[in-house]
Image 1 (cartoon, rainbow, N blue to C red):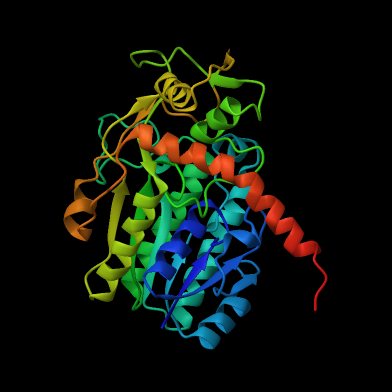
Image 2 (cartoon, rainbow, N blue to C red; image 1 turned 180 degrees about the vertical axis):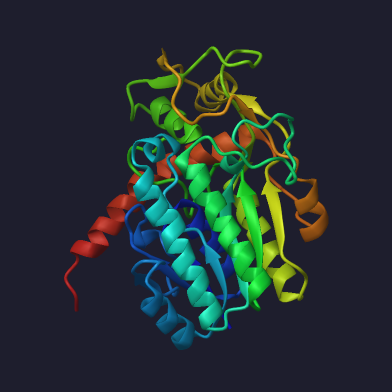
Length: 339
């Protein structure tokens, strides 16, 4: 039996593929490479270039590879972009997810792990936030994911489809073995941007708002290491395969760090200073959001291993230094003449 990983050439999806391959699972990746990279998919794992919302293609893959579980990562994820281009986000995140869920039902796929987001909570009234908190997104990105959650839950009730919805908090870091990490140009993730600035790849880093109701005025987030996040997905897959009921779970550590905290951590890890510029708030950014992840720990037996901001930053730095070599190796492989 095989696991289909949509978006498996992207940041988190490729880390998931590494985790599954390391465990001896059969995996196939479906990615349109709009933000992913073919070189991020490990050798021996089939990469199919296409859209997760293409029902004919997905049905073909289910039959060809004997797919029994889908891990759905493919999505657009930049909150400010979703404010500017909401219809594009509803198409790529919600419409495509609907098509994928329907295809799973029609083709007998029983297990579905969905990549959701803490953005479904909007500005939560209580911190840390539990899964029972009201879902009131403040961005089209958050709404696009919440709509997908609702469709998946309804499909699960109506059909023989069990799911785990994982609501991510702020994912950061890289594979501890430097096999992968955030690789997109122009990324907006704070730790990625700060690391690039520390290495001289950007002239400065902007802090979007210092007037939030937080101790230092900047936004507070719960940063989770990507390796711990994909381990939660593996735990979710084992949970579903054991026949247990569907769940919706938070994925975070339960501790928050401000924008200034993160910048200071990157400066310490890199051993350099860099320019920090204050800018206005961005649309769609909540002031503070921190997870209560007790349910994931209890239900899945999830045990994070990298719950440390310095470790997350150190792994992100190591990957950023490795990335140019990976890109050069990939370019040389593409340019090499075939035998």
